[in-house]
Amino acid sequence: MSKTPPNPAKARYISPEQILKDALHKGDAGVCASFQEPTLLTEWAISLFKLASSKGLYCCYVSNGYMSLETLKLLRKAGMDGIKIDLKGNAATYKQHCGVVNVEFVWRNIREARKMGLHVEVVTLVVTDVNDDEACLEQVIERHLKEAGADTPIHFTRYFPAYKFHKPPTSIKKLEDAYKMARKAGILFPYLGNVHGHQYENTYCPNCGEKLIQRCGYKLIRYKITKDKKCPKCRTRIPIKGWPKGRIENHNHK
Image 1 (cartoon, rainbow, N blue to C red):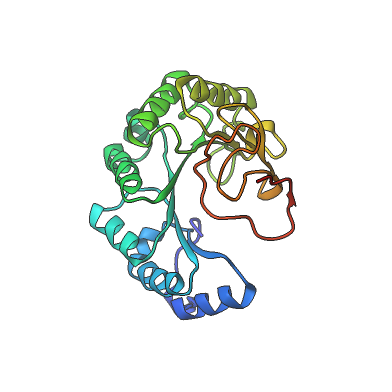
Image 2 (image 1 turned 135 degrees about the horizontal axis):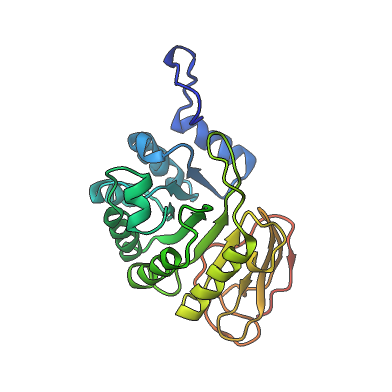
């Protein structure tokens, strides 16, 4: 989508009402506004979220986080439950690669989304020779703790060369180092992405280390968090929303 000029004459419009109808028909638990940047279709998303939340579906947003505070409030009021924000790196990364974009607006929205009670997750695509140096990752982790808090998940995602950028894929060791840096600094739920089957895809209890959720890519393999959202081993509360649907091997304990 990002590589093809838009052609309105051939565009296909799908209404919020149709999306809701399809979601209900398929038994979906929620709806999500994503590719490309959904802030470009804010009014459409607001209409969808109002409809979906009225039917008991969750509503979430996958965004670069570069929106006005008014927009964030309108989305929340319309029924948005969660937001995943792509953070490109530290201030130097934004200055060098994103033009006039000011990273402070992104951090503000992360902070305010948390205050609004939204479920927030932060993702950084770690790109070779762009934002993969230790200083950059340390600054991201430091700001994450300050603005998002220790229990807000942060994902370090592996980059692969595509289109016009041909640097080698992100070193898995660098991703692992970022994960360990985040845990050492006090972030309770760091993850690695685009490294299917890696142990750091999983959710562990930050208190006792029990493996609570096992993942492989987009699939949930096992789920052990109790229905009252606690670790079954040490009873530490886990800040997670919702309950998994579908056929997942469940080792849940009361």
